[in-house]
Amino acid sequence: MATPVSSTKTMMRRPSGGPVVDTHAHWHAPDFVALLEKEAGAHGAEVERNDRGFVTMRVPGIRSVFQPRYMDLETRVKAMNATGVDMHALSLTSPMVNWAPPEFGLKLAQVYNDSLAQAHREYPTRFVGMATLPMQAPELALKELERTAKLPGIRGVYMATHINGKNLDEAEFHPLYARCEELGLPIFLHPVNPLAQERMSRYYLRNFLGNPYESGVAASCLMFGGVMDRFPRLEVMLPHAGGTFPWLVGRMDHGVTVRAEVKHMKRPPSDYLRRFHFDTVGHSAQIIMNLIRLAGADRVVLGSDHPADMGCVEPVRDVERLTELPVADRDLILGGTAARLLKIA
Image (tube, rainbow, N blue to C red; front, side):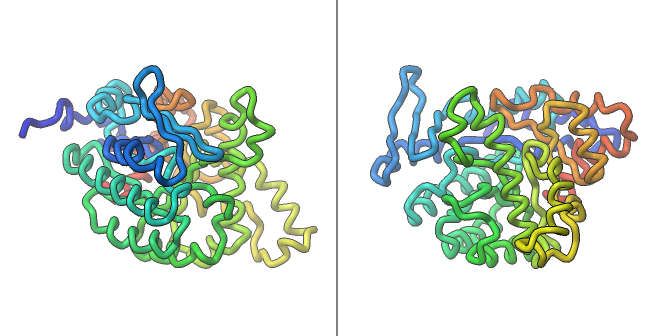
């Protein structure tokens, strides 16, 4: 079998010589899209093809268009080479699988996770996978986690910031967190179907504001709900530079001193900044530098949101421009920390 084009080329932009790892890179696996087109209509979704021939899908609160740039791995490798990225940690994006009836959600997750493993087999130095689970049925999610954890290239779990309106501190999700902790699989959170869409339908506010708010709500629930204390070795990664969470932590610090709703907290919220990891999708060197001052360079990992139009076009160059950082800190952000989290040699 022919070696895929550029599959072995690595840029080695990190001072240490290790791979540059993008932790926030979305992929719509062709087999996943094909299954949606074939069967999602029988499970409550509206599926069709638009005038460009792209598959589209709509369920309440979610509309997805499956474009070739999200699906083709050869195109992706070329883009990675052009921007100095060695490896993508591939993850699904909207619509995920939580909208579906449980058994179909499991089927979708299985097809996607198997595709992640196949992508890793074909490009072992370029792709690892963040598994998708049918969280609307926690018992099925746990079953799929056990199966998927044995697949080649699976290095983490991808999870929505809420599960059909349920916050992530609900007790029904705790067994899954426990198993992720035992397996050493980090959880990467990402917004889907953000809150208050009726007020953010114009100006693309559902993305500009809705996505970062979602990350803040999710992280706060994991913190206030005791998940981060109950599972002290669980690693959680937040997209979009942590959303609102790092920037409102002072307000929450004050809140725990005056509000009865959070009197159970033994430590101030700012102590939990270092329990999370944050990607570099902040679109501002000042914001990323302030994030590093708040949480530490070792808690920040490279992200691009590739290939979304709201992503970072030159994620490596964005980090290299942080010249006030020591070289060792930039090395951690470009891939050192991600290599530890995702067990990349």
